[in-house]
Length: 393
Ligand code: ATP
Ligand code: MG
Image (cartoon, rainbow, N blue to C red; front, side):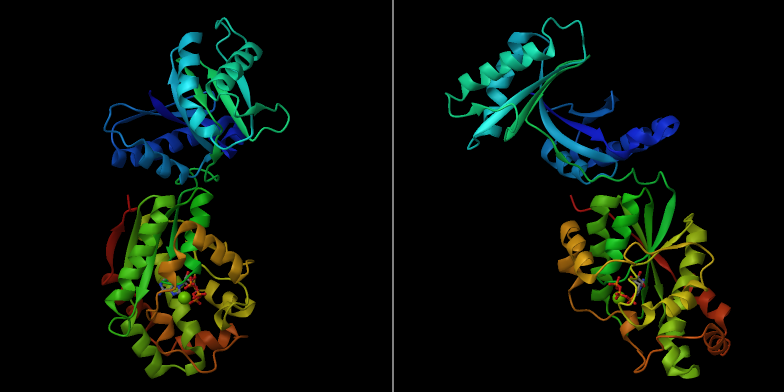
């Protein structure tokens, strides 16, 4: 029996004249992902994407997992392929469908005939195959057309007929890259990986900048961030992580500036350097995991001060979320267990005892002028290096 994957688009359907652009991007992303899983053909017709294994080595289970995480797909299911004659459709239905009905009480069959030359109409298909399934299940299940536990679908299309037992929800969103590129400020915490995931869901191709403060932060801390990037990459596609050292900047800050402003000054540097990295790599916005009121540097006034150091729009998808809500997403996408590993972050070295929660921009800028701002930023950027974080299989 040959199995394929059927994927339905979500929001793309609403894109009117731009629909092709989104469909092409989605197929391209799926083709790219398929390379890891073997030889597949990916095609589309009637708002459905068909993912067909081309030989016995193609790993359909792996591809299914990967497609489930691909943004732009609203629903996905496995289906068995039948020849377009009623005998073959019956045979495949008997062999393929019972596994999905084990332990269930009721089902119904929905026939759909988009090829109108096929000699059985939708109603006839539903009835014939419903009977076939009842027979194959030896009466252990009943038909319930109003509230069935499982809906079996038979679709007779142009190329072939397909039998499947329902679809599950896909990742939703719109295909990555269709909205351009965004530079994620990726720490080792809980929030920023979630923020990257959320913006990729809205069509951004995510690149990342991570700030370290070696030797105050360890190689283990960096390794943790790369593992986080590889984990979100299963959803967002591969992530390039640019690692920038803030060690010199932090040492200068602690020597020359007033302690209460350390964090704000550091965060302004992060924004500024991230903008420069974004310009170098074609990103048109920044993404952070900030959430209003979560810590001293995330009050409205503090955010205004950090925003002022950025020349790009800053997207903060977690801004209105509670920690619990952010954690729920981080568990879902698999980053939570990594995020809670206890390594020092550069924000936790040189932290002020009394950080300003209602900073005044003029005062912060006056502190900043005590530093050779530009020269320190240039030095940090020139020492940056890049690691490509690929999704785990
Ligand atoms: P997170 O859980 O994402 O670390 P947080 O609640 O710990 O966030 P902060 O430490 O104030 O908050 O950081 C706010 C945001 O600044 C982070 O979400 C992230 O986008 C960015 N950021 C913080 N530290 C770093 C870092 N070392 N490298 C890159 N970005 C960082
Ligand atoms: Mg943090």
